[in-house]
Image (cartoon, rainbow, N blue to C red; front, side, top):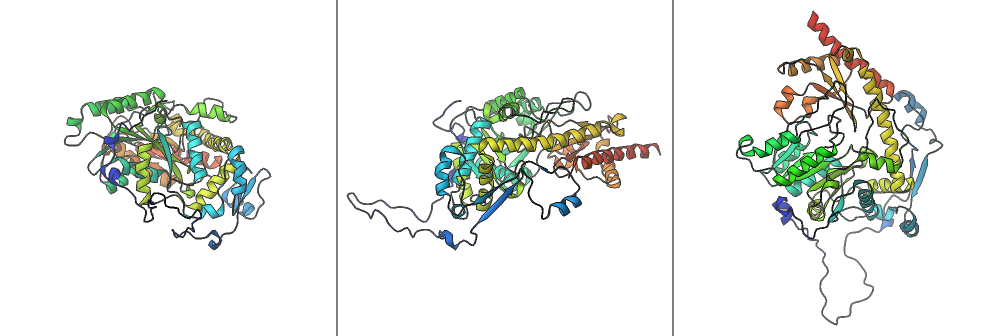
Length: 508
């Protein structure tokens, strides 16, 4: 780990961000020398309501012991059976206190500090309430391991909000962002809003053996693009940053190897751009379906299995990491956090002061005190492992069902065994003629409407017109919302049936 006293990449930050300085209407004023001020002044400064004005006096939160604690069931049965049911026997619960100051005196030494009602429903610090903000720092130290010491964190309103704030800190109008050709396409809306351009980076993601394991690679394409920038992108400035989803890539489900990440970071150093690392899916890491699933991971084994991230390889503050609680806790809390160099977090904090401010107090109460009830950092990691295990079961069920389906057995389609995340890609074999991709995928969409299964077309998650035409012969299947494994297995059959329909039409 390295330590720096000055941010080496100041020139890559936005002029608007650097010029922004929030000044509060109340500022303390200097007192004359030898002036004796009252030792206990009455503070009547801000419009901060006394907590007894708040209508909420108590909160009680019940927790599941694990995802699907009572096993799988159909939606109708679940709704009927659990509407007024008692919690599972292993479930936890906690009360949110009006004043947790006495509890927290113990918590500082023994466990995670709680947020009480009078604090959580009050105005609070822009970066986030102290206990939850401290948790993000503890989590970063224990799990993420930045390669430099001058880092900090700030809470956001989820992953997409974190991405927008990172972009605000970096881009001026007319600047250029690099992004993978298949990606989380809402970044395009951020580009339009802030006024920067996006240039796509071609990707290699087809497995070497159909249905086999493949790494996500694009370093060679990126190197070629950057080395020939003047001819490849005439008139455009060199890129200031690269937005990347390196693990459980959305939509592909693949992950970058450590060696590949090192190559990309070397290119960032050579061509002087930042890396904005978006990692909402990194903790849902999988084993191939050919291996016996390991559902008994310790927290140490789990952390070691995550491997190195871009920010853990970074030694100068070149990487900004986006985190979200949406995938392993709940999206409705609208809470995430950013890890980055203190200077970058400073700019993001200034922007947050004039835009969203901090996440909802209720969200921070429930999220933070859940972590406390689970036993702090180690307990929360245990919950993440439970969520990871659930997604591993789902991934295996879907991939195995597709691998044994008629269309895959006949070579008309194949499934990519996801390495991480919430999505699996199902690839339709459109033949060697690239011109057939769009036509075949349009026909496939109609066929899936007939067989009764809804997925996302690969082309809808591309920012490259070339990629849409030549490499988008796949659909993204979500593992997230299905009520049980049987639903995923039935979806696999219906997807395969849709491919079979295409070939029946060809024979007619």
